[in-house]
Length: 439
Image: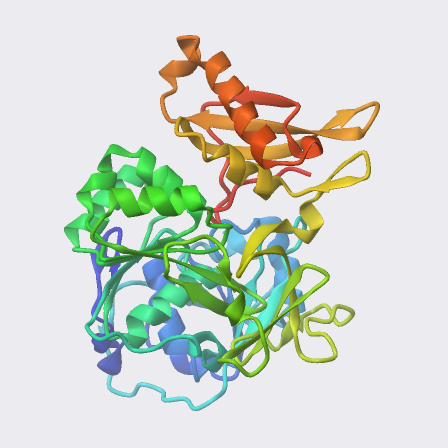
């Protein structure tokens, strides 16, 4: 496993420790894992499972002001960190253990058989993040050992669900993993992936759009390209297939609460309607009121610290909140249940409009949002990033705007067509790799 500043063989943990010989002090405790370095987090996770009562995986981007509430909701009584404890934890938690990336030999290594809870923070909410409860069984249920050891890379943080899945794929598949580094430039990350011979690479569509914009995108030659975390429209799938012609391109549906629902490897957006049903595979899938619902051994067992909020319905399904639409023999994602723009009483999913705009060959990415209107209450507005930014200055923008509007009018209902288009140099992407959508 490689971080930005070096590598570690996980087999060394068989006779060593990255926690300074203090693992026994963490037995039976609820541990907040809050490190800057992903490699330090990865090593600590392996050591803590089976020893700690629970592990709270805290990504480095979580606001310090939310840590007291997170710690209180999870009954945290120990902190594992590579940071100054006073910097991240203004609470009187007595036990602090230093995490590192150097494995020290140790003869008496505690061996645990405890069923450790893994608490993951959800994304996409304001205020204190929600926490959901998993364990190693639910987290590794979707994973099958690879035919040959892969060299995995990911744009995700492994303390988020998407990154944690790649962490386990590398470990279970007896492979290697190249971790990203906070603040690392995209080009530097891609060159580091190339230097370690990455074969499998995972990220959100927004991650991949940013990667393809970098001149360093051509230095890697993956065998497998994986997308998840956002809707993978046909445009980004086609672009990746053309840019990496020797790679298989697939997209997975997964969420922190519902786990991995399914993977699609036929090169097409959406998913086959044949996947929907009960008892057809490892995951039961149903569509209710247009919303995708999942039930399996991969789902989280519940929320932590929010007793009033149920995760599962009466039949054990998780309502993902992702809306789908059946067209022929295939379901297509159209957006989030809570992200609808109301135009004169008509519902518009921003993601559906974005997918339409992104079909224009000069468009790199787009973000659709609501704009107030005194007559309809709201109209659709779009921020658009062009592949060639010089085209905006050269007067090409007017022509492109006219072409985008023509595509939208052919493909969308009139109320979904953008009333205004702004050309922008870039779009904000969150630490989780998703487009930032302002309410």
